[in-house]
Structures are given as structure tokens and as C-alpha cells.
Amino acid sequence: MRLDTMLVSVTFRYPRDRAPQGRRVSVVGSFNGWDPAAHPLERTPRGDWATTVFLPPGRVVYGFWVDGAIRPDPLGEGRLASTRGSEYSVRYVRPERTTSGA
Image (cartoon, rainbow, N blue to C red):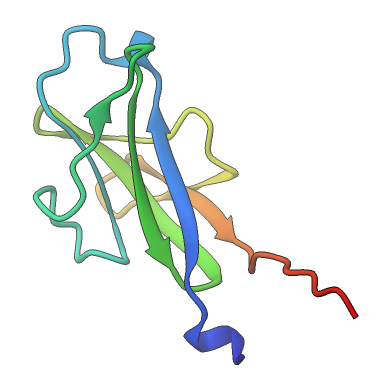
């Protein structure tokens, strides 16, 4: 299978202590046109926010839309300056390794 056609399961989490009173949290990024309606997060039993998105391997630039404001991921792999003077998060989606018995 070609890497450019493979999708990888990526879970985005936003810690509960970063939005304890949050009403609406979404992940926005280059993969969904920065649309907060595309990938809303749901509260987990622990109170964190989470969603899973299937993405191709490569670099993903994203942020969390928290009640109308974009915030960087405190657990991200890096940061990238935005044109608005804030920062976006960076994550590297790696192909999942599969093993086969021979």
C-alpha cells in the first residue's frame, strides 16, 4: 500500500484543566479547512476532551477551537507561528506499523 493513500487513526485530546468550563471544543487545522464544525471533541469520562480523526502520514498543523478561540495543543509535538501573532500546534502523523506472520 502506498503511504500517500494510507490513513492513520489520530486521537486529539484537550486536557480538562485547560477548559474546565468549556462548552464547545473542536480540533481545527489544515486537514479540515479550519472548520470548527468538522471535528468536535466530546468529553471523556475523565473530563478531558477527545476525538479521533483519520489522516494521511505527514505533518499536521492544527489548534483547538475552545469556545470561539483557537488555542495550541499543550501536548503537541511542536509549534508554528501563525500570521496573527499566535501559535499553531504541529503533529507528525506516522504510518502505523503492521506485522504479518509468515
